[in-house]
Length: 314
Image (cartoon, rainbow, N blue to C red):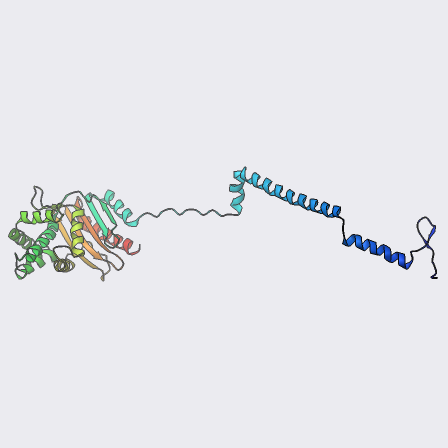
């Protein structure tokens, strides 16, 4: 029989300790209770969990409603989170600005027509206004001569030197000789048939032309559709051999090819041409009736350089 020791509790009365068997029985019951919780306890825990989930859902909905009902929160609060990017302002077209600045500062009347032959974009001021053409009419005479050669109405050998002098040094005697051989009215009719009727060689104020019509004629030469591919090529050769170079080509790089024709008579100062740049080929037409003839050729040269720079750098 094991010895029973006395133990004391707060009352001071001795209590007999549990036997080994009783102790194991109590511990077993406690363990069973812990490992096998009652159905009521499980149900209570599930209810508690569902309440927590429901509380979270209500919290999220409440926050969303507050955000939706307070638009200022988005714009003011979000500014710290989303950086707004400024839309860059469109840059002004440099060529458009150049010609727009030229016209009001010019002493007299001016018409300008510029066309990028690669993109087809054009810039123009007063391009449909008629100007006395001075020697620009010689471009129409050149076209008509090659048309007559193509039709076997003229022998190229008999007119080659007159053509060269008329274009490269703007010789008036050669131009009149060729025009009278073909007939002024015949040349005028040919221009009408080719859709270049604004180049007038037989009207009351002839010879006259518009900047656009001259630009169209030069573009036809450039594209090989003036009379024929071969004739257009020979016309280009004459234009690129021009010897009066105080305007369009004056400030351009030496390796840039310029085929052009000047016009000058009394107060008229013109230059029209095809420029073959490194990045862009374009038409440049400048017609003017000026009260300041001594400055106009220089103005044409300066504008030509600025347009060249703008088109090469675009």
